[in-house]
View (tube, rainbow, N blue to C red):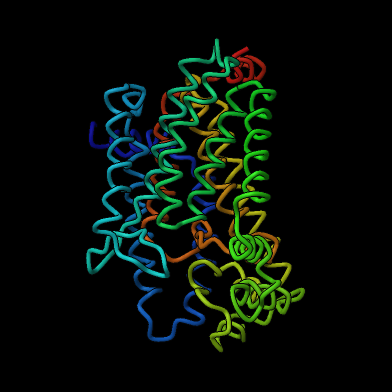
Length: 382
């Protein structure tokens, strides 16, 4: 009798803990990345390795979904995690492997590990804890600076690697979570005004001509298409040449003829757009929207402010990656070297993404059902 009930109990647990809609929406995005890689990699092992990383990421996703993550609310758990990530970022400057001009990886031979990815996830957790414990007095300006301290340390360490893309995502995570937490917008605006004035002073009285040229070239890469703007220029050509329905799988000339660099990582969106065209891009962005919808749906039934803030941070994490990657691929944002979620080749970011979703679903197991207005008021600390 118990043996007969075991499959039924397992199905109930899987139904309660796993958001199968979220999982189903992610699958075609993963497939799109694999198809794009397979189109151009030839005898390369990138495609095979990505499949292995996807299977590893699935293990984290389903494994984390069955863990009760209320223990993450404890200071003696989160602070060591945060300090551990900071320590890894420091060690990178001594033992890190330099690739493409950035010392961002630990190289273990058969695989590499990028601490910045895990740091983003831990930052979301520690900011969730900080804001959830102080929602009553959240409008006090000191919380803006204290939370900013949690973000500025990894931001500077990542920026010095230099990995501007990951540093930018860290900033967006902090900014987005401070806004969602209910911190006074006037105080936030004041901080940005001070920052703008400081940069203006540096621009007018400190920066030399060559430093200004570097900044302008970074912000507007298409100005110098034969130098620093070459990658961005080739990417925009690839996206535009896809037109309405694309050139077809394996027929993207920019990627096949090696004009488009890093087409399996940073510029996989451009490679995909060239093959699938405008229609394919719309479908892809729609799938990303569905993923974000499921993340926010799980967020709004969080058991407390901590879970709801965490879910919001995860949504901000994905939105930042999508916005920055697509922006640089179509030439409206600087080239920062940041992966597109679920599509770009790489294990660190892929495992981190599924870990983030797994934690969210682990929190789903002890979620609540209440009136949306009440949830919104508690979420904003009203």
